[in-house]
Length: 107
Image 1 (cartoon, rainbow, N blue to C red):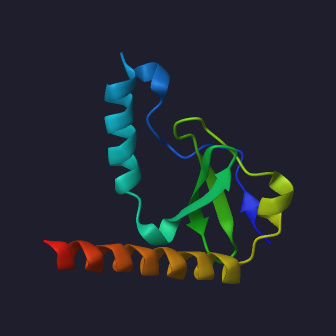
Image 2 (cartoon, rainbow, N blue to C red):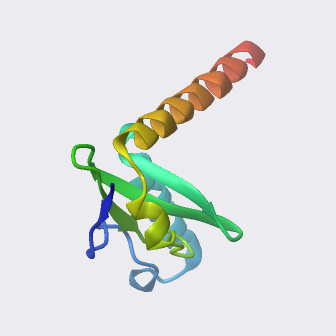
């Protein structure tokens, strides 16, 4: 079972930027710096909820306040297991590899 920390992952805040474009560039850069095996995303409403995987054993997640700041229902998150995260990470890696391969074939 996962534990969700009450503190948010250190991430750029919209209020610290003069306009959306500068915030978005900083937020995208910060998101790109998080290793794929430490990032969990889940569809919520018209976007995604973002979480940093602080630890796999025990499973500990920390919310990333990105764009709309969507969060998953705590009941859902508490039910996640390490095996679920490993499966999610493997699927993300496979998706990245697939699109990287396609991009290289078309260049």
